[in-house]
Amino acid sequence: MAQHPGDLRDRPAPVGAEATPPAPVIEARGVAVSYGPRPVWVGATFTVEPGEFVAVLGPNGAGKSTLARLLLGLVAPAAGELTVLGRPPSRGNPAIGYVPQRRPLDPELRLMGTELVKLGLVGHKWGPGLPRRKDRAELAAKVAAAVAAVGATDFARHPVGTLSGGELQRLLLAEAIISDPRILLLDEPLASLDLRNQAAVARLVSDLARSRNMAVLLIAHDVNPLLPVLDKVIYVARGRVTIGRPEAVITTERLSALYDAPVEVLRDSRGRLFVVGLEDEASHPHDCPPHEVC
Figure 1 (cartoon, rainbow, N blue to C red):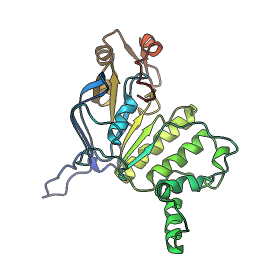
Figure 2: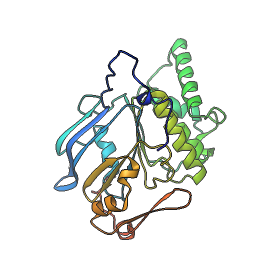
Figure 3: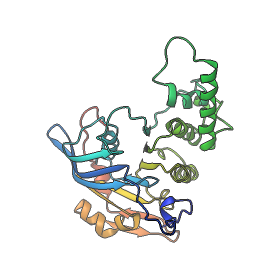
């Protein structure tokens, strides 16, 4: 596991002082979720600490996106206890930044990248009239800071319909962090990106987590681009949730137990992990309820 020198958790406590561990930003104890009579998963018990980078993995339909919906207060637990920043989840929590699954954009869309980022602060506040000059200046400064934090300054004033997938993903991240959230939820941000951009976005998200002491939960199918920077993995499969360090969770024994089927984890000469034996699961994923994303 890569070390992160700037990570506050790795710094020794001052001499003569007792280190007080930070409170978890997310705590789940025996959480279950269901859609109507159909259970999605049960018995989820885990914590996420400030500044941790956590990947949420599992087959299609297993309930990965449902975890994000729980944290956003869009779905209530069917059992157990879930707290976000010490309280039950609630809709519209400004302490949570969220980037949903990206949808294709119209190439003719003329919305500027900076306007997209601005929606992270004012998207729900638009109304008649213009903000005062002072407010406009403060907003512009926050937009510029968020854009710079994700390395998007060079293209932030281009129409979003003309941007590459990697460029657009950076601006969506800027939109999510402009309000200085304490938790960042990312739903499949690496999908449709090439390998180079997958690795670049993974490093960027890791840097944001460390520099802002912000917990990140990133939903993904492929763990390989994330392995160098991850702290934990939450693996969702067959109605169960397992959490731990990647080397502890992504093993032949653990995944075989999760799927109740023979699964083999292989490592190539470059250290990348490959999971063999999930072809049937991929071909017959769990069904989601109508009009829902699991």
